[in-house]
Image (cartoon, rainbow, N blue to C red; front, top):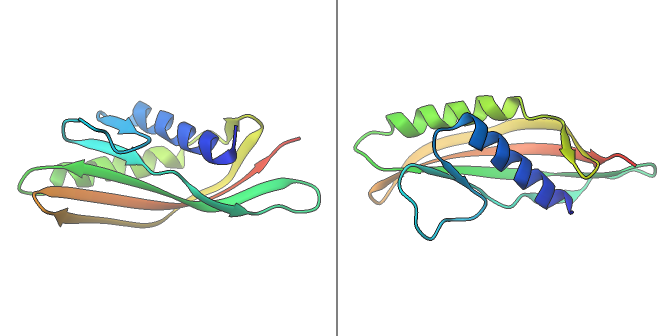
Length: 127
């Protein structure tokens, strides 16, 4: 499998373990609030002469309703803390070297709250 698929699957699995909401790898057709979506990672080459690597960004978005963003803030914090403990071995030979929060934001969009966290990721493939 590609680095993109392995990384996204590992993040979805980790978030399913730490959050009490449904976590999807694409926007759901139907789903009750709150829920989370892990976008497909945007990766670029981070290789050397001796190993294959990828560097990029992963975006997590949480959606919720209500008058105040209290629940979405707490879910976002739990997700960020949970991803700090993502296992380095992703499978298929891929290993995470670094997963770091770049930015996080909560805002109102229409009648919903949207919390986003963007992560920098560096990974390589063991041979």
